[in-house]
Image (tube, rainbow, N blue to C red; front, side):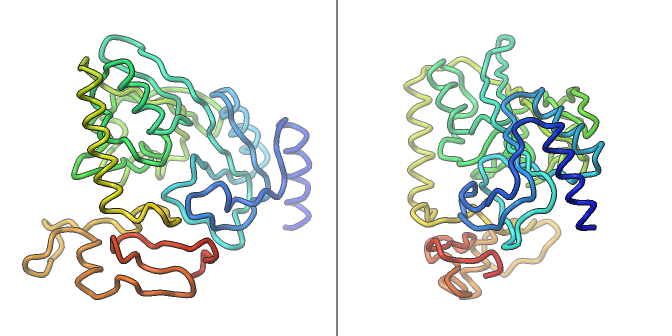
Length: 283
């Protein structure tokens, strides 16, 4: 297998311009943890995404997609195959009431853009560290609201390099879940429904969201965001008086501050595992 992997690598380097071998991934994540990947490619456009997926597929190379590296924990031994990082940055109004953002745009960039243009709907996501593509992949949530409810259409690219789009109903959005988690498709762009509103009002809502995060989350430490999914009170039994929150359950169990090596459960928010910069993925 080692010889086969080396052959694949040589062909990938020949066929896909801009590929880098043995890139350490820790600096590219919010946890600052993780080993190297075999090959790494920055996709600056949807065409780059298509070329990378099609080339890797022809060579039998596994592809792992990376955005801004939040909400992920990369193993200490790294990732085998090709890591494809999405870097597309376009934002535009495609029709009245609809904004399209490339998958590589961060949610913070998108929020700032919509506020400047007096477009409401996304301002509560201010302070979210991930990208548009990653947020749609995991159907990001904040204070009980799911990002998928704002989505109109999603541009996708298959392993064969073919581009197409699906509407919100076809995305199979659920709590912390979407179609692309199991479909071998990569998000290339997302359209969101917005409406006109005074930018000053939007800024106030955005600041309120950022303030809430600062007060409740351990933002000064390295983390990947919330680690565990919240329980569903309709199907899972909860102790009396405890909110349907993973953080509340961890707090009730007395696990805040618990450590393995230098990784520990945050004292501020039980659903965050934090690092001081020296933790391993295993810890």
